[in-house]
Length: 126
Length: 454
Image (cartoon, rainbow over all chains, first blue to last red; front, side, top):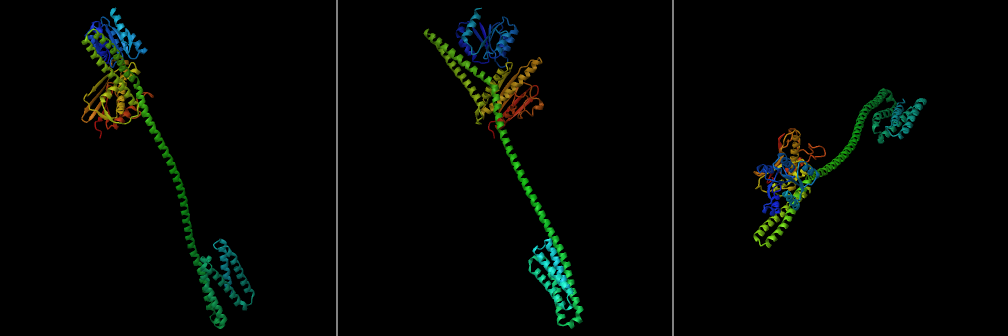
């Protein structure tokens, strides 16, 4: 399962690689990283049909996570990727907006990796 | 002849009038009244008596005249009337001589009597002339006195005026002093108001930051939490690997663990730096200059401003670009103060681009808001530029933007002090704050700071 993580904090890459160490080693999951919304779109255009799941931060300079979500849903990638939004502010505004734009899930920072793992496993099984 | 007594009577009546007019002391009035009646008495007796008594009557008249003359001569009260003495002495002497001649040699008198009589009349003429002359003198004296009196009057009037003037001057001085004190008080009040304004401006800009600060602290704290969490997990895995006799794998995990600890330290310091920066910002500037890394300062405030605005307005977004010269030498400045300038200019830039974005969206046009901060060393100066692609400053307002209290924001939203304070701070560092502006295209604020202020 290919997962694209979008966040402007570069250390997120190291964190994910350690957290999913086993899964990566066993080949269950592979990760790609983009550090802005624009970079994420570039990646999706360059690697169509690869990413099954996109994990995106909302609060990023330039193109925000919500804008990215809108772009992805409008682009009609095939197959349509699952998009999970992550934000430090779990306010209703962001939450509602994310779902109205077609987000599949909504997570808050700091990330609960055990919960995330559970969700990823469920998606992987489906 | 009753001439002597008549003259005495005239003189007495003259002196009585003087006494009545107050030119001589009142006590002399009765004195001359008595002499006046004595003179009348002598004249009356002269009419009644036989001719043989003429000599005695004449003697009495002369005696009265001499007595009056003596009185006038003796007493200083009559200084102004001394002329009377000089007027009658010739007559008295002449009459006395005539009397003696008639008495001693009646024959000689009969022959020369006309001449002697004429001489006596001449002395009367002399007396009359003296009277005329004294009158003229007196008039001149009177005029002189009048002049003196007027002068005295003038002096008195001018003294009164002077006193009035002095009173007025002292009143004015008092009023001025009072005004001066009031003005000084007002000035003191203004100074303290200014200090309060500067502080409240600082607090207002801090308010803009709070959400950004929260976000900027939250992020590193998240990493601290996540990295310590994952490290605990890695240790479990390491134990498993060691149990399975897999030292190579365990070593790899140890390397990861070490870098995780580095990350925890790094993010802990990052949060620490932000809190310190915030405290520095809210504190009254100590004015202490210290070698400062402007790149770090600019980066910090760029992020704080961005996240601060972002937290306040969810729709706000802009891309941030930094163009820092990496080998920039440290510059000796008051970091809080320069930080405030940067914060102000960056916040303004973000406001400008988000304003433009709203307008462009309403017009249905696409717009990519962007703010960039650049640093570079140019000769002996450090140049910091904050550039945005907003609408710029309208040409007619460019001259006003550094003036205190000038703001285009609605009342209550901007203090109007941001740019003016920034300008003052840069000036105080011996530098310059300028604007390169293209209305409709964007604005670029340029801070020039000398490395060694003169």
